[in-house]
Length: 380
Image (cartoon, rainbow, N blue to C red):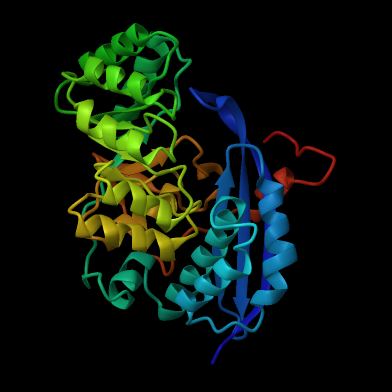
């Protein structure tokens, strides 16, 4: 039986080509990429990664290096589910979510990549062949991407210009930020967006936890009538009852989950009927193993599952399930550092057919951005 032979973790601070903004994080000029590279005793490799919005990445790397790397060596490459459970309990005192889930995600993604590569199958197909509740398929279903703008501070003319560029580049669904100081500003901006994209383009809005429950209900009612696919993250992520009230009283479908970091948290929202579109992020919920568990819970309730960020990974996960909704193509794309980035054509994402998840990073280029204690990497 093959076993893990080496584990290498790293962290990079990557400046964004254009600063982005939302109602919670303000202006974001860089993000952190945390990577894990696994090699087994046969020389096969697997890559996993997670990200932060600029803080905490070196803590994730430290957890990987100090508490998981040596411990993982000699682990059998086939037993991913058992490994995930052991990681969970190894880190539970400082974990049960948070930084621990980020670190576990990078390892779990790398393990699935390694296993799919060894099987010679693209990740989406490998999951359908090996996960008991998924349906095998010879070809992937259509995965529909949307452009996830991070644009709260953009003037309306800039917002609309960038939207038209995204549609011209192949997108047929758009998300924009809300949560301006005055609700009337949000309504005016969303109205302008709807008029620009027309009635056929699915349009979502994202408040990034900006509002209280009562404010969110008021906002949802004010935005009702603009044919929105969903209102995302209207209030604090852990307010289960608040989300249920917004869902029942606001009049709009609710998407949420990018700030949840455990299956247990998703269970609270799903069982309370508090969301219409569960939105697990594979890079922050603990990896592919818990992502699939959230997707299974959603399927049992008849809810379509959507995604947040890391679209080069999520395209495989949505292709693996039969109740997929939209794929978010995020503003933190790694296109500059990926050999074959995700392609969008006429409203469809092209699902890679390379073994594993198919993401190959340009390590030479990334090396300029490595996080070194006491310094900041150079600009790209």
